[in-house]
Image (cartoon, rainbow, N blue to C red; front, side, top):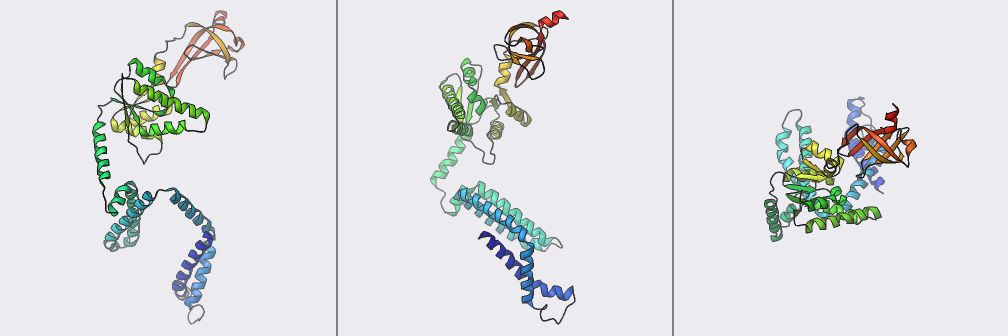
Length: 368
């Protein structure tokens, strides 16, 4: 049914254009006059309609798909968003109409410029109307209720409450909460200032805790337990911030924006978020960096005794682990899998993602 309507739309446009233009084209281009058929507007309407239907057959499917996509989006969009956007578009077009007369008088580019100005004001109206939808709906309904005024007061009060000194606010991300080590760090008293937990991080934790996947659900519930444990800890102040950024979808991006707004630091163990914060100029406290800094220092040339557990990625490599989880890659250690081996450290690789030690068997050193 929708395709038929689109076909009919193009046919009507072709009929109208053919009725108005085709007879004049035959006269001016082909110099055909005194021909009852070709001079007829009705013949032009039929020809224009047929031509437009034939030439737009390929376009019908695209237009139909676009209409259905818009329809699906409107079905799931709240009524307040639709009303706000519509009111914004109408206001934008009215403003463009007020400038229309002056713009049309511009030589040569007047009419095209008026068209683009109308599109620009319609788009700006849509964006402003969508952002300020609640205020617009209340304004046009004739009531700016006491409830809205109380919300404004609460927002102003919240802005004053969130006046942190630079570096005082420590914003926790989802990964560091689920990790759990942040609670132990708080108990030690090494982390000062105010721990800030944003509403969108809480929402993401709740979403993970309600997941149908057992592993995700357990991780989410563990994160919520860690938050409860931190809030009960009296050594540091915890503050939940009800600030969201509707123009941003990703939680990590929202956290970076909030850290910039509060002049705070992001506490995380996410390597990618660490890099994004560095690019955005936001200070980061990486739990993994702290853990790596507290590990015993191992220098090239030192000896150690390890248990070779499995083979490595490269040929003839063996892999062992220290008590703190540090991986040791042993060149020529594959034949010692399952047994103890004395090794010499050859090099140490240190990154934010962890530390890796490269070594070789001590027996091989003696042989050389």
